[in-house]
Image (cartoon, rainbow, N blue to C red; front, side, top):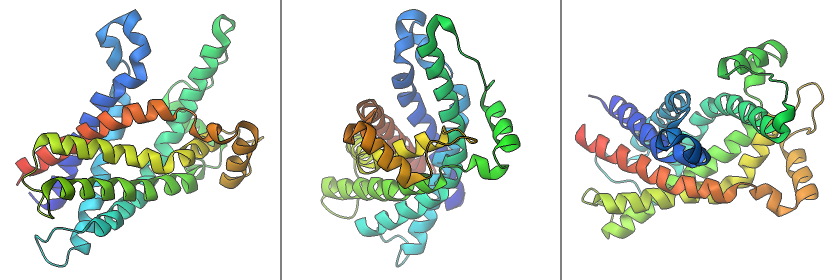
Length: 272
C-alpha cells in the first residue's frame, strides 16, 4: 500500500474516531429524554463528511511532508510541520466551505425553531441535499456553496499550521528528540488533545465570522464581507461576541482531536 492510500485510510479512521468522541458533546441535551442512544442521534450524515475531511487533511499533509523532507525517513522539524499543516489547510478549505455552509444553514433553522417554541417556524430546508439544491438554484450556482471561502481559508490555514506544529513540538518534547516513533498512546493522546485546543485558540473569531456570513440572507445581506462582519460583531457585541460558543467548542475539540490523532497514528503504524 502506497503512502497516499495509507494516509487516506488512516485519516478516514481518525475522522471517524473524532466524530464518535466529539458527537455526544453536540447531543448531550438529548440524554435525559432519549437515553444513551440519543448521544449518537443524527451521526450518520456527518460521519461521511468528517471522515472525508480528515482523509484529505492527513493525505495532503503527508504529501507536503514528502515534499519538505530532505531525504526519505528523515523526521521533519516543527517549522516544517507548520508549513505542511498550512498546505493541508488550503486543500481542506475547499471541502469544508460548502459542507459547513449546509451545516450552518440547518443549524440556524433549528435554532429558530427552538426559539419560536410552540409558535412554530416555517421550514425552509428539508435536509442537507435540499440546502444544496436551493443554494445552487437561487444563490449564484456553485459560487453560492463557496460563500465564506475567504474566512474558511483564514481559519484552516493558520489553524492547521498551529495544530500540526504544536502536535509535533509536543511529541518531540515528550520523546526528548526528533524520533517520536516510540511514544506511547498516552503521550499521543495528550499531544493530540492539546494540538486540537491550539487550533481553536488561534482562529476561533474567524470561525464566528465565517458562520455569520454563511447564514446571511442572499438577497438582503446584513454583511458586505468578512471585515464588515468582524467589525459589526465587535461593535454590537464586543470581543465576547467573537468568542460566542468558545467554551463548548474547546470542550469538544480536546477529546475529539486526541481520539483523531491517536486513531490516525495507530492505523498508520499498523499499515507499515
